[in-house]
Image (cartoon, rainbow over all chains, first blue to last red):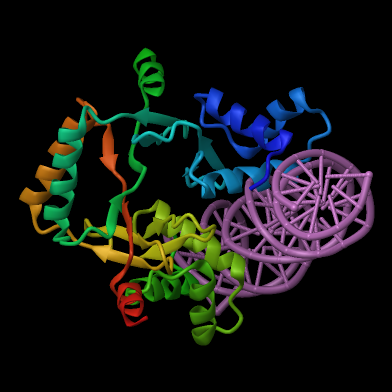
Length: 135
Length: 135
DNA sequence: GCCGGTTTTGATAATAATTATCATTATAAT
DNA sequence: ATTATAATGATAATTATTATCAAAACCGGC
């Protein structure tokens, strides 16, 4: 993989965002820095960066992938009301180990060829819960 | 929701398949029974049936939804090699309760607004593992 | 059985996200 | 600087799915 100005801009955008941006959002932000950048370049690089493990691809199920620059172990919840992606971090390695054991036990999995998906949960986010209570 | 021959055919197809068929596959099978059926009818009914809880929609992340006629509590694994959807059933209610507790504990979730996604795991299916060992 | 209202159908156009193509340009190694 | 390789940007193509809408099917009452 060669250096390119475009790729670095895209990586920076994804890394410095905490909103799990879509390709389109990344494109808009990238144009602010490099107006001539093409949408194909954005897609191409998001794919390469994800492939390379520099960023994470999040499939929300709504037809548009989102991307996450935080590659440390964490998980995502999709809000069933607004579709927002919420980060959830495990409370510690021990808890995580406990979860894996529970998964293996619950489903009778013996080997290590299985990993827990990064988008693990669906629920109602706090913002939507707040709005609900007001009505 | 009214009776219609098409809807029943589609429901039967999804129910009697254990291959988590895509809309396209359902369309092919439906045409064997009712050659004039339209693709839009298939999509429309898969959506309505899923909305209604008669079938399950599985988002595999590869851009084409799959459908599952078994609505009892079970989970899915996506094979990271071949993309196949593997059914995984919990070993019992107690195990499932254990898993939920582990999830809540691991992620500091207190309320009940959260549910574990039906597509929970990614891994290598047995068929792909078998092929691998032979090489 | 026929009528009127409602739902569903099927053909097809439209949408929307993403990928492929390809000539041109940028980057890296010698 | 030269040259090989990789990346870019414009745009066409692809693909799954949804929207549109006139025609047909269905259902309850008469």
